[in-house]
Image: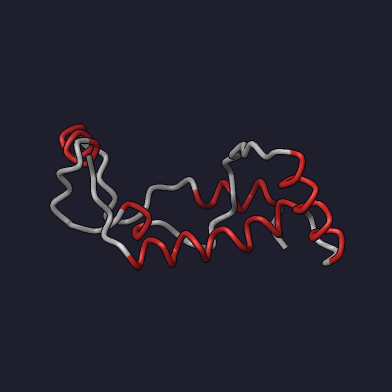
Length: 100
């Protein structure tokens, strides 16, 4: 099996059809994307995670997460991700994404 580094390197190549010109970048950044798709729809769901996200939890929330993860013999991060991503996908499907 390829190492994590090799898998990540394989994902850094430019996707076919991806635009690199400045005008396209500016247009999409301003929210005037003529394609009409949501930003995450063009991304690979199964890509290797490369970004971290800090989540502030109080003692109750952290203890709850820790205990549930321990009971299921999985990491707190994996448990939170397993529950969070489907909830976000459901929320996105239920309501249209409005850009400011």
